[in-house]
Image 1 (cartoon, rainbow, N blue to C red):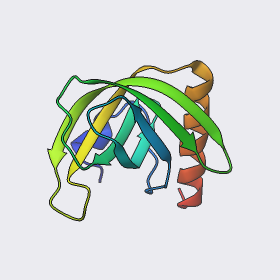
Image 2: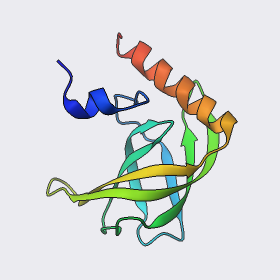
Image 3: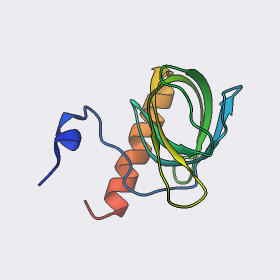
Image 4: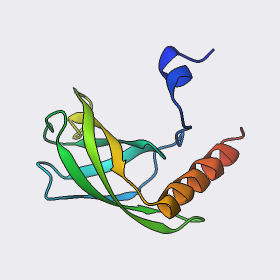
Length: 119
């Protein structure tokens, strides 16, 4: 059974953590890695907290088979402490600016990820 959060999501998310190259352009903290991605945003990890509603520029490079570089803008909608490992905060970023071709590449990546997971 899906939880309430999954049921409220408009777009599917990648299910596995991938080493997506992520860079915050001038943000208060560098993104360590991305846990999941959808056409609406990303869940990533940082060492430092990022205040809610902080605007952030992102560069994301999706791996094979999609291999697509994304330049996006977003806003931090959640930042929660994680006491496990070196990545101390889970940060959810909602895309506020994303080109249609980037949305398509993310959708293809998520579809591929779900197919690889056996969905």
